Length: 61
Image (cartoon, rainbow, N blue to C red):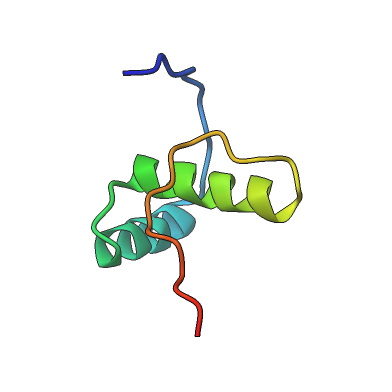
């Protein structure tokens, strides 16, 4: 398993509650959901993805 950097992230209780619900809906932990969100943002910004894809690629057509 790749080594991961740990750091503190401060969220409002309301934001964390919404994040936990979103994560549960997608069968992820809150931490896993944050990693997925950041990975998607990196891809969208053209900065490359660092995490392993957690979803299969979309099928065309």
